[in-house]
Structure formats: structure tokens, C-alpha cells
Length: 442
Ligand code: BES
Ligand code: ZN
Image (cartoon, rainbow, N blue to C red; front, side, top):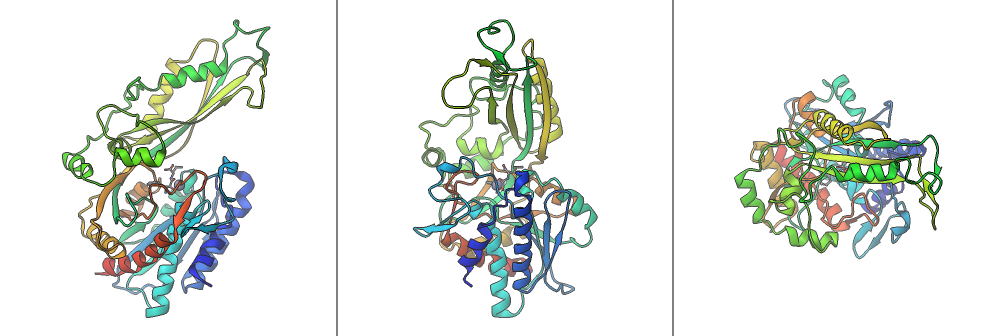
């Protein structure tokens, strides 16, 4: 079976972790993955959790060798809006050398490249130069809720020297990219409750508060007009962007023009005083991910909805703490709640921001491996705007740093319709794995 057949099998599982009705599919995907890890000669286990299973696999460990953990996730985000996909999200296809499917980039293609890279080295050389632990979870896209307890419970079995993850981006095709920081994330849902039931907007319009209007007003209080977050104390603890970062990022062949092109906007918008990459990589934000309430069907309906909601997430940077930020936003919302409305605020998942020293010995080894996988182009040192919630927990619970060696391209459409991953990057990922294990063994 070819490596692409393997990838296609993996991508056909609709392992959407957030949807209760996909629980069985997520479990089947974990079983497939464990089978594949066993197939390349590793010993694999599936650990049930109160949520989705965690898959762990290892080779035979040899005393004296470095132990490398490779982390990834087999769960994916929902496919909505599904009718905006060119081809169905769980029926992978290759068009012009690019695989299209939900999870192709985030993260099935990238983690499978590591697995198949190890498989190939084992076939060709009979051994890999390190003690390996694959830790692949099914809840990354919902905040890795059950992974921390697992790390605590299995701390000894998961002891390692370094962790590697390919679940971040490259700034451009063929540009080896090493990521030394991730934003954290915290989620919150706000529901505005008004009348006891939906009301006729003619009979009652003008005399009771409308929850949809209340949600809109509340959302509007979260930012100043120039893009700065208006929540009191939101920027407390935020580490300033380093001068060397500003300079180095300014020289990257990726900036405002590329962001405009890939996003299709005519003008960037965000906190004043920062470039696009500075804002996404080093500044915290408040985002509205969803808003709803009232009549959503075709045509019109004269109703005052009983309730309305907004789904919010906050992207955090060192040294902000998710719990503190959630508390500040909660206080801000309560203080700005319009009269006649009762707010119900529920905190969701969260993960801390992460940063590591890019020039550590392991950091340099990872960079050499990236250069070997993508020869010829200067390496980019970046931070990322996305979050991998468990990374800072690895540091806290296992005491181990994480190397982020991502293969996602700026136009990969992760979390969106037409998510894609070039076959070329999948193959580079297998080469990257072989080079990485060699460099980390040194
Ligand atoms: N692979 C991403 C994280 C990522 C994306 C890092 C782009 C760097 C650049 C990961 O799968 C992801 O999407 N994480 C979620 C976590 C959240 C749902 C808790 C995210 O960042 O939204
Ligand atoms: Zn993701």
C-alpha cells in the first residue's frame, strides 16, 4: 500500500471531536491509527478517557539513547459550511498535486508523515537512532481536556528528553520554518436571556429588551474602534515584542501583502501600531467565532427572540493566564450588560501560551533537520498565532520543551472548506522525520 493510500484511509474517518454523534467515528479512527503504528513495527496502545481515546506507541527503548516524543492529533474540526467544499470533506482527492480533505493538513497529514517516516527508516535500516514515543490524541481541537490528567498519571512512562510536533505552519512553500512560540487560547460562551418566550415583535417591540440587540451591543464593547481590546486589564502581563523579533520578522518574505492575498481582504485590520504578523504572533486578541439568535431561515419573521448568544475565544500571549483573562472578560460583560437582560456566561476550554528558546541545542538540531528536508531556502524563525493547548502543559508536567516543525502552508485552509495539503509536503514530512531523529540523536 502506498503512503498516499494510507493517508486517504486516515482522512476518510470523520473524526470530528466536538460533535457527540461522531464519537464512534473518532474511536474507529484511533483504532485504525493504533493498527498503523503496530503495522510499522511499534507497540501501540489505546487509552480510553472520559472523552476521546489517546493513542500511544513506542519502539523498544535502548538505555542510553535519547527519548523523543512525537505528539499529534487525529481529531478534526467540523466541516461546516459543508456546501462550500469543492469535493466532500471526508472523500480525499488529489488535485494538481494537492490532497483535499478535512484533516489533510491539520493534523492527519502531518502526523502520518512522521509515522510513515519512522516506518520507512525501520524498513530500510532496521532501527531508528532514538527511543520513540508517539502520543496522538483525539481532543486537540476541543482543548485537550483529558490529556493533562493522562500526562500526570503516566508521567514515568512518558518521560522523554524532547517533544516534536508538526502542527504549525511554514511561511511559504519550501521555506523551512521553525516555530518558537504559540498563542494560548481561552473560550467562552455568552447567552443573553430576555423574555420567557419568543414574542411578537409588533405586540412587544419597543417595550422589552431584545436579546439579539443586547448581544450585538455587548460584542461592540469588546474593542475600541482602532482594534485595541477594550476589556479592562486585558493586556496585563503581556510581554512586549522583542526588538530582534521585530527586525527579523520584518525581513521575512511573508507579511501584510501575503496575508491580504491569502485571506482575500482588501485591507488588514487589527490593533494599531503592529504589522499583521506581529499582531497574530505576539499580541492577544478577542474574537467572535459565532453569533446567533432569532430567526435564521429564509424570508422574514417578526419575532423578538427569547435569547441570543455569542461564542468567543481569546488568543493569549506570554505571560497572560487563561483563567485571569476569562475572569476579566466576565467582569467586563457583567458591567456592560444592557438593562432587562440576564447573562449566562460559560467558560470553555483553554490552553496557555508557549515560548521556547530557538537557539537551544535541541532547537538547533530541529532547524538542521528542517533545512535538510527543505534544502536551499533560508530558514524562518517565527511564532504562530494558533494554539496547541497541551504544549505548555508538557513543560509543566513533564518538564520538557517542545520543538514545533510545521508543514502547513498559508493557504492550507485549516478549519475551513477545501482544507488541503500538498503531496510534496507530506513527502517532505517523512524526510523531516528521518532527519530529525538523526539530528536529535547527536
Ligand atoms: N494546528 C492547529 C494549531 C496551529 C494552527 C498552530 C496554525 C499554528 C498555526 C491546531 O490543530 C488548532 O487548530 N488548535 C486549536 C486549539 C483550540 C481549538 C483549543 C486552535 O488554535 O484554534
Ligand atoms: Zn486545528
